[in-house]
Each structure stands twice: as C-alpha cells, then as structure tokens.
Length: 378
Ligand code: URA
Ligand code: ZN
Image 1 (tube, rainbow, N blue to C red):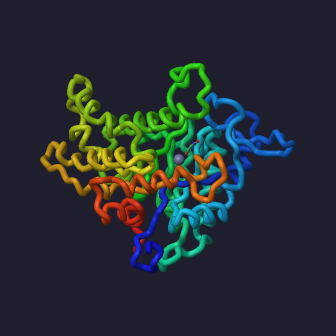
Image 2: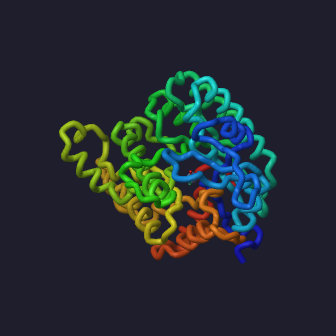
Image 3: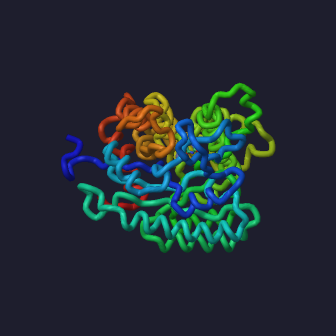
C-alpha cells in the first residue's frame, strides 16, 4: 500500500496555514478588522470569530484551535496521509501594522515558527526529515525601510526549518528586496488577501464565494503579471516564486497577455521573452480542485520554453515538475463534521485523475517536487 515504508512517495502539503498564538493575540487585541472577536452563539456558548476580509459579509468565520494548535495540524495531516507540511502564516500577515510593530512581530513570529517546526515529530517513514517546515514572514508594510526588510531576510536565513517566505501582493516591488531574496535562495509563496474591488460583486449576499473563488485568484494573477511586466523575472532569473491557487487566471490568460504586450508601444520591447516563457520559471500549487484545470496548467508550463526568444521546444513532461500539492488548511473545513475534508479529497482526486500524467508525474506533484524545491533529501 501507499503506507509501505520507504518505497512509497511522500505526500507533502505546501499550502497550509497557521495563526501562531502570538499572532492570534494580536488580532484579539484589535477592535477593527482584521480581528478575532468573541460573541455568544445561538446556544449561549462563547465562541471566537475571524473577521479579516475587506468588507467581510456578516459576522465573519468561525475560528478555533485548528488555526493555532500544532496538534490539530498534525491530526489533520494524519487523517489525510500527509507526511510533511510547509506551514505558512495566513493572511493578512503583518500588512495592517505600523512599520516598527511589523518589524518586531515578523522576527518574533519567525522565531515562533522555527520552534513550531524544529520541535515537530520526525516524518514517519522518512528518516532525517521533520513533519513540519515553514515559510517565514517579512515586514512588507508601507513606510518600512528597505534595511528593516533586509534585516528580517537575514534572520530567516539563520532559521534552519524555514526555507521560504510567504508574501501578499502589496509592497513587493522593491529591487533590493528581490535581490536579497534571490541571493538567500528563499522560496517565495505569493498569496492573495485583498481580492478585487468588491463593488464589482454587486449587492446580493453570496457569502464568501465571490471574493474567495474569484477575487483571490485574480489578485494573484494581477500581482504576478505586474512582476513579469516590471522585468523582475528578467533581472532575477533564479527567483523561486510559488503561486497560490495554481496561479489564478494567469495560465488561461497568458497568450492574451503576450498579445497585449506585443501590441503595446510602451511595453512591446521591454521584456527579454514572450510573456508565456515566464510561466515556465514559476511554481504553481495544485490547489485547483479539478483534474482538467491541473492538466491545463501543466500544459501551459510545458509550452513555456517554446516561447523563449532564444529558441526552445514544447516539453510535455516539465509541467508536473513545477506543480505542488496543497490543502489551504484550516480554511475550507467541511460544513458538516467529517474525518476527511472534501476540499482535500477533491485536490487529491484531481491529481490522481489528470489523464496526461504518469505515476511518476503524480508522485512529483504529491510530494517529490516539494522536497526538491526545498532541498530536502529523501
Ligand atoms: N480564506 C482566507 O482568508 N485565506 C485563505 O488562504 C483561504 C481562504
Ligand atoms: Zn491559502
């Protein structure tokens, strides 16, 4: 079976979140969003709720130990046969804080996360590996000095179980920061929070569906497109950027993007390659919930080299080397209590059902790509 020691490929979750206790405290101390607040529920019990999204409808979402207790993360991993998790702080990170507080809290939370990871159990069946590693935080807030950010990049570099950082889509356009991140060889997980202007979603209440299903991935699409247009991937070709939610709409829109660039007098000659080329330099999580979507993203990555201005060819095998399984835990819990989470089962089933992927491709996406990306021996 898949659980046979050493012959099986690992399952590695690279998109899984935490609000560390220190961060939850920060949210509890606030009186406006983002915040965690207490209220009495319908049965007269005290409960905590999470209010973080812009113009969040209603009373926010339930929040509890799933978000901060490591034992809950480990239990979730066990239930879904996940061997190793790369845990990241959930949105909105430090975005709402003044520079000094953001700087201090970034360092404290990075140390907390190192402790959370370094004291996690060994990964069962994978000697030498822990069950949990992490993505750190940077104080990417408006008004922060570049030296403060570089300072925290240095700190992250000293933490052995943290080999990447998670960032939102604001305040990321800073040249020395990209240079330092490339130099430090940190994996950058680019994750949405703000969505798009909620006015475009109209007045009917549709719960969180429109901001999460459309706003989130479109925000990521815009952020990575702006990075490409700014030439960041030309100047820092060794950056390792991992896009949330399979890159949002970028794979679907990349030929249109290439065409708009080619027809724009201001941008036409700016980049070293056709826009489609850059998709082959990125990493994509496999949090797309459907096999056909994964197949499509894989195919778009596979054609990237064919759009190099220096010559290259379509390669059907390369897509599955740049896509990585994730869960988005503890978000999207089942509405009715169950051991297995539908959101996780859907993403696993999608990976198993991509018609163009062989077993080796599946093993890559389920876990081997993550171990390679983070330089972990297996
Ligand atoms: N909702 C969030 O706020 N963040 C996620 O990562 C997923 C769902
Ligand atoms: Zn997420």
